[in-house]
Image 1 (cartoon, rainbow, N blue to C red):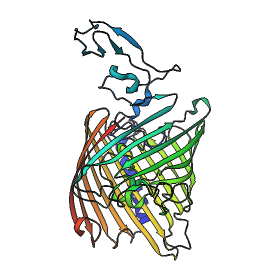
Image 2 (cartoon, rainbow, N blue to C red):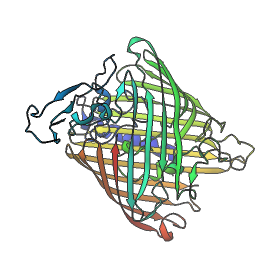
Image 3 (cartoon, helix red, strand yellow):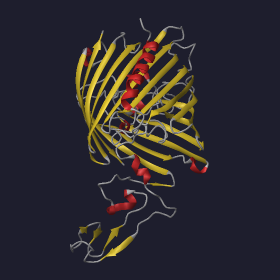
Image 4 (tube, rainbow, N blue to C red):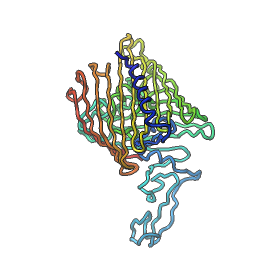
Length: 466
């Protein structure tokens, strides 16, 4: 019988061989999902990893910011506003008639500064940015009609899943040494699943719940780190999202509303530690660092290596390998709840045409407890196919096979298939309807609703970015 590790590398090799000829040596890494999904843009440096953008959101950072203080530039508007007709006290074409003021656009693109002069056909930022400093966020409202053993575990309830705000100073090493950092805060039903729950002692943000665990609202501070960079090198120190895998916690970073079993049960959400990054050239990026275990908030929860390699094989084929290996909890080898092992993840991102993108992920996790017994032994293959119909519409399909040994009460194989769409009626609004089928091969007790061995779930959410 093939081992899971051998099966992983066999699958990777087959995918590489099969796609090399198909994608060819030239095209563009800008892909079918560029307008809809980012590559963990809220987790990693925007110049590293998969080179795709969220829903017109990262473009907010392309506004030119002058060194001068940004403020209102106003001009008096008389009874006859240029280009419009007189309306007593009425709002006309960006200005007030009869003694009002016309709002001029600021260079940072912030709506608070820009005011009534904003063109709502373009993406806007509530606060804008200046000199590399940026404040933003989003609100995600969601509904699903059946519970999943994942983030979406509160069925038949319209809920605020992520009310997210962040502040950051991005690195700019074009002039040499630079410093940066980022802080993220989230409140909602996704909050408890985003906390640093690895220590399970209510430290850091682990006790910030406003209801029963995994069913109520809660808060989290998933990122709080500083960063220093020089030239092609940078080092991040603090509490930050994991680089493992393809899907992310932040809603705008995912095409689908729901998540995979792989992301929820096998991959860490966050780390506390240090992670270095080296951009060797336009094709190769290397990562390496030390973490205090998994899902810990500035508290020792183990000792592990975290790292990986990103390789632009061709202009339209990106291969990313990430891994963590070591003690995932500090109690090892003396605690009953301790865990030690390794996790390998390989993501292949292929731009097939200007409209079609195919992503595959292969992942293997093997851990043992203090007594040397197997704790988790999972293997998964995830496939994504995304087709862009128009600038405001994309369709997607996802299929997952998850060998869930050590995850549930019984060793089972879980499968799920999801069909969904991304609808963007405005550059700052994303609507994601989906229908999902889950089925379990084996004893389904404690997995799906009512212990069923199969389930159909409809879900929809909307994301407003600011």
